[in-house]
Image (cartoon, rainbow, N blue to C red; front, side, top):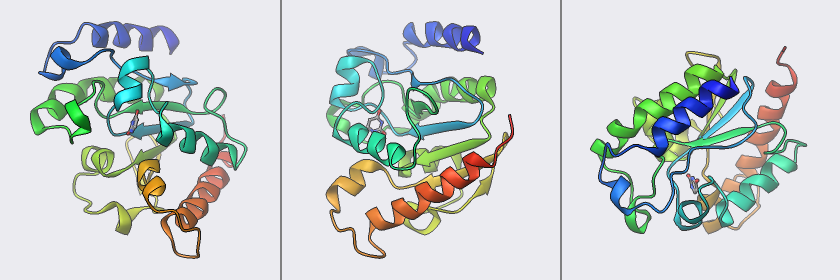
Length: 192
Ligand code: URA
Protein backbone atom coordinates (compact mmCIF):
# COMPACT_ATOMS: atom_id res chain seq x y z
CA UNK A 1 0.00 0.00 0.00
CA UNK A 2 2.73 2.40 1.05
CA UNK A 3 4.89 1.90 -2.05
CA UNK A 4 1.93 2.28 -4.39
CA UNK A 5 1.04 5.58 -2.72
CA UNK A 6 4.65 6.72 -3.04
CA UNK A 7 4.47 5.99 -6.79
CA UNK A 8 1.33 8.12 -7.14
CA UNK A 9 2.96 10.85 -5.07
CA UNK A 10 5.94 10.87 -7.43
CA UNK A 11 3.61 11.31 -10.42
CA UNK A 12 1.81 14.08 -8.56
CA UNK A 13 5.05 15.91 -7.69
CA UNK A 14 5.82 16.19 -11.42
CA UNK A 15 2.29 17.22 -12.41
CA UNK A 16 1.85 20.19 -14.74
CA UNK A 17 -1.68 19.29 -15.88
CA UNK A 18 -3.22 22.61 -14.90
CA UNK A 19 -2.26 26.24 -14.28
CA UNK A 20 -2.02 25.76 -10.50
CA UNK A 21 1.32 24.03 -11.11
CA UNK A 22 2.76 27.46 -12.05
CA UNK A 23 1.72 29.21 -8.83
CA UNK A 24 2.19 26.48 -6.22
CA UNK A 25 5.08 26.43 -3.75
CA UNK A 26 4.57 22.77 -2.85
CA UNK A 27 2.31 19.94 -3.86
CA UNK A 28 0.13 18.88 -0.94
CA UNK A 29 -0.35 15.15 -1.39
CA UNK A 30 -1.34 13.69 1.98
CA UNK A 31 -0.64 13.41 5.67
CA UNK A 32 -1.45 10.98 8.45
CA UNK A 33 -1.49 7.22 8.40
CA UNK A 34 -2.14 5.30 5.17
CA UNK A 35 -4.84 2.80 6.17
CA UNK A 36 -7.97 1.08 4.90
CA UNK A 37 -10.34 2.33 7.60
CA UNK A 38 -10.56 6.09 7.81
CA UNK A 39 -9.72 8.69 5.17
CA UNK A 40 -10.65 12.37 5.20
CA UNK A 41 -10.90 14.23 1.89
CA UNK A 42 -10.74 18.01 2.19
CA UNK A 43 -10.92 20.79 -0.35
CA UNK A 44 -7.63 22.33 -1.43
CA UNK A 45 -4.43 23.57 0.21
CA UNK A 46 -4.40 27.05 1.72
CA UNK A 47 -1.43 29.32 2.45
CA UNK A 48 0.22 27.21 5.17
CA UNK A 49 -0.41 23.92 3.41
CA UNK A 50 1.23 25.32 0.25
CA UNK A 51 4.18 26.53 2.34
CA UNK A 52 4.66 23.26 4.21
CA UNK A 53 3.49 20.69 1.65
CA UNK A 54 1.11 19.05 4.15
CA UNK A 55 -2.70 19.20 4.29
CA UNK A 56 -4.58 20.85 7.15
CA UNK A 57 -1.71 22.48 8.99
CA UNK A 58 -3.26 25.98 9.41
CA UNK A 59 -5.93 27.03 11.90
CA UNK A 60 -8.57 24.81 10.30
CA UNK A 61 -6.18 21.87 10.51
CA UNK A 62 -5.49 22.49 14.19
CA UNK A 63 -9.23 22.45 14.86
CA UNK A 64 -9.58 19.28 12.81
CA UNK A 65 -6.91 17.59 14.94
CA UNK A 66 -8.78 18.64 18.11
CA UNK A 67 -12.04 17.24 16.73
CA UNK A 68 -10.38 13.87 16.08
CA UNK A 69 -8.64 13.93 19.46
CA UNK A 70 -11.96 14.59 21.22
CA UNK A 71 -12.98 11.01 20.36
CA UNK A 72 -9.55 9.45 20.75
CA UNK A 73 -8.52 9.44 17.08
CA UNK A 74 -5.25 10.88 15.88
CA UNK A 75 -3.85 11.98 12.56
CA UNK A 76 -0.56 10.17 13.16
CA UNK A 77 -2.12 6.85 14.11
CA UNK A 78 -5.61 6.55 12.63
CA UNK A 79 -6.49 8.89 9.77
CA UNK A 80 -5.18 9.43 6.24
CA UNK A 81 -5.80 13.01 5.15
CA UNK A 82 -5.79 14.33 1.61
CA UNK A 83 -7.50 16.93 -0.53
CA UNK A 84 -9.59 17.02 -3.68
CA UNK A 85 -7.05 19.44 -5.21
CA UNK A 86 -3.32 19.01 -4.58
CA UNK A 87 -2.12 22.56 -5.36
CA UNK A 88 -3.23 25.82 -3.77
CA UNK A 89 -5.61 27.93 -5.83
CA UNK A 90 -4.36 31.56 -5.75
CA UNK A 91 -5.94 33.59 -2.91
CA UNK A 92 -7.73 30.42 -1.77
CA UNK A 93 -10.40 30.82 -4.44
CA UNK A 94 -12.54 27.77 -5.21
CA UNK A 95 -10.91 25.41 -7.70
CA UNK A 96 -12.05 25.83 -11.31
CA UNK A 97 -13.75 22.98 -13.16
CA UNK A 98 -10.70 22.23 -15.35
CA UNK A 99 -8.45 22.18 -12.26
CA UNK A 100 -10.77 19.70 -10.59
CA UNK A 101 -10.81 17.51 -13.67
CA UNK A 102 -7.02 17.64 -14.02
CA UNK A 103 -6.45 16.70 -10.36
CA UNK A 104 -9.15 14.09 -9.97
CA UNK A 105 -6.95 11.20 -11.08
CA UNK A 106 -4.72 11.57 -8.02
CA UNK A 107 -7.57 11.37 -5.53
CA UNK A 108 -9.04 8.42 -7.43
CA UNK A 109 -5.70 6.60 -7.29
CA UNK A 110 -5.26 7.32 -3.57
CA UNK A 111 -8.71 5.94 -2.80
CA UNK A 112 -8.29 2.94 -5.08
CA UNK A 113 -5.07 1.97 -3.28
CA UNK A 114 -6.45 2.49 0.22
CA UNK A 115 -10.03 1.27 -0.35
CA UNK A 116 -11.13 3.02 2.84
CA UNK A 117 -14.14 1.64 4.69
CA UNK A 118 -15.01 5.15 5.89
CA UNK A 119 -14.47 8.32 3.86
CA UNK A 120 -15.16 11.69 5.48
CA UNK A 121 -16.14 14.24 2.86
CA UNK A 122 -15.02 17.49 4.41
CA UNK A 123 -16.72 20.62 3.04
CA UNK A 124 -18.59 21.53 -0.09
CA UNK A 125 -15.76 21.25 -2.64
CA UNK A 126 -15.16 17.64 -1.58
CA UNK A 127 -18.91 17.03 -1.56
CA UNK A 128 -19.19 18.34 -5.08
CA UNK A 129 -16.40 16.04 -6.15
CA UNK A 130 -17.42 12.81 -4.41
CA UNK A 131 -21.22 13.16 -4.31
CA UNK A 132 -21.92 15.61 -7.16
CA UNK A 133 -25.65 14.93 -7.15
CA UNK A 134 -26.00 16.09 -3.53
CA UNK A 135 -26.48 19.82 -3.02
CA UNK A 136 -25.58 21.63 0.17
CA UNK A 137 -23.32 20.36 2.92
CA UNK A 138 -25.80 21.56 5.57
CA UNK A 139 -28.53 19.23 4.40
CA UNK A 140 -26.34 16.13 3.96
CA UNK A 141 -23.76 16.39 6.77
CA UNK A 142 -23.98 13.58 9.26
CA UNK A 143 -25.66 11.19 6.80
CA UNK A 144 -24.05 7.96 5.65
CA UNK A 145 -23.83 7.33 1.91
CA UNK A 146 -22.78 4.11 0.22
CA UNK A 147 -19.52 4.49 -1.66
CA UNK A 148 -17.42 2.27 -3.89
CA UNK A 149 -15.30 1.02 -0.98
CA UNK A 150 -17.52 1.48 2.05
CA UNK A 151 -19.42 4.28 3.74
CA UNK A 152 -19.02 7.99 3.20
CA UNK A 153 -20.14 10.81 5.46
CA UNK A 154 -20.12 14.51 4.52
CA UNK A 155 -19.03 16.72 7.43
CA UNK A 156 -18.66 20.47 7.91
CA UNK A 157 -15.31 21.95 6.98
CA UNK A 158 -13.39 23.12 10.08
CA UNK A 159 -12.94 26.60 8.59
CA UNK A 160 -16.75 26.92 8.61
CA UNK A 161 -16.70 25.99 12.30
CA UNK A 162 -14.04 28.66 12.93
CA UNK A 163 -16.46 31.24 11.54
CA UNK A 164 -19.37 29.97 13.68
CA UNK A 165 -18.34 29.99 17.27
CA UNK A 166 -21.56 28.99 19.06
CA UNK A 167 -21.69 25.60 20.76
CA UNK A 168 -25.42 25.72 21.40
CA UNK A 169 -27.59 22.77 20.51
CA UNK A 170 -28.14 22.78 16.75
CA UNK A 171 -25.12 25.02 16.00
CA UNK A 172 -22.52 23.84 13.44
CA UNK A 173 -20.03 22.97 16.23
CA UNK A 174 -22.68 21.01 18.11
CA UNK A 175 -23.62 19.15 14.92
CA UNK A 176 -19.97 18.33 14.28
CA UNK A 177 -19.72 16.89 17.78
CA UNK A 178 -22.67 14.59 17.01
CA UNK A 179 -21.06 13.61 13.70
CA UNK A 180 -17.63 12.82 15.10
CA UNK A 181 -19.17 10.63 17.81
CA UNK A 182 -21.14 8.73 15.14
CA UNK A 183 -17.96 8.40 13.04
CA UNK A 184 -16.09 6.99 16.04
CA UNK A 185 -18.90 4.48 16.66
CA UNK A 186 -18.72 3.31 13.04
CA UNK A 187 -14.91 3.21 13.20
CA UNK A 188 -14.96 1.06 16.34
CA UNK A 189 -17.33 -1.37 14.66
CA UNK A 190 -15.04 -1.96 11.67
CA UNK A 191 -13.31 -5.29 11.36
CA UNK A 192 -9.69 -5.54 10.17
N1 URA B 1 -8.60 23.24 3.88
C1 URA B 1 -8.65 22.09 3.18
O1 URA B 1 -9.70 21.69 2.73
N2 URA B 1 -7.53 21.41 3.02
C2 URA B 1 -6.38 21.80 3.54
O2 URA B 1 -5.40 21.09 3.36
C3 URA B 1 -6.35 22.99 4.27
C4 URA B 1 -7.47 23.70 4.44
